Amino acid sequence: MPHSSVEQIQLDELLCWRVRYGSNTLLISQQGAQVLSYIEGERPLIWLSDLASFKRGQPVRGGIPICWPWFANLGQNPPSVQAMHLQLDSAPAHGFVRGVDWQLQGIQTKDDGIHLDFTFDIRLNPQPDWPHDALLQLHLHLNERLHIALTTCNRGDTNLTYSQALHSYFAVSDIRNVQIDGLQGSPYLDCLDGWKRQVQDGLQHFSGETDRVYLETADRLTIVDEAWQRRIHLHSSGSRSAVVWNPWISKSQRLSQFAHEAWQNMLCIEHANAADDCKTLSSGEQHILKACIWSE
Ligand code: TA6
Image (cartoon, rainbow, N blue to C red; front, side, top):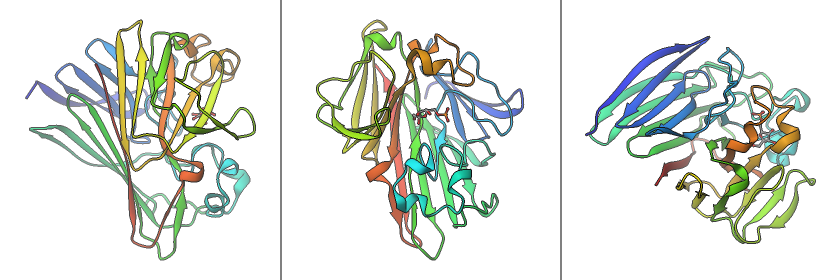
């Protein structure tokens, strides 16, 4: 097995772990159980903003924030997701688990790589406006690839309906010169045009702000980056929706922790259960959203 190590570090206000496996380096914070960055060899695969700040209660710009128990603004979700919340207008974007500490359950070095387990237990973090009994488990497994599994367990007596996303920021050479392979023919909701339903025609290129929820998605997507001679492979299970986002020029200037030119070097592709793909769990049921990320 290649050389591997795990060290606990402090980044400003956040407790983090730096995990190494061979030439791969993963940085995770206890807050949000958020992957902050992932570097393969010399080059970032998961992007972290140059202006990222590591403050308590504030999601870090970049990495893989976990959006749960709703994706985007609650009011943009299906009525069944909205109905789980008691104060629609006070609900934070992307849910309430990004900015709070999760519990580290364990770190194990095995023959197949390094495994980290975190939980978010609603019983330890009660949400008066979202009064449901659920347990979130995040399993991170690092070897030649980064494997992520987010499990939602419904411990309540009634149905639990939620949406979610692994809000992954990928590093690219120049958004104007990359494309996504695998979305051809998929329907999508255009979040910049009233969430109107469209259909993807051919490979996805970028020439402006893009914010889309793709539906009926394939379980394999690829970011083709000719300039860096790199293909980033994204395999998933438990998801039939994927969010594609680049803020482009003007929105970049309204984003926190985001340099004005940073839009050129990042691309979000987020494995999700969003819109029509939201999930309903009966009492005692669980669902696992999985993603596997690597480049070659
Ligand atoms: O995933 C795309 C999106 O919903 C965009 O509309 C934009 O708001 C982005 O998420 C970033 O959201 P955040 O709350 O992390 O700034």
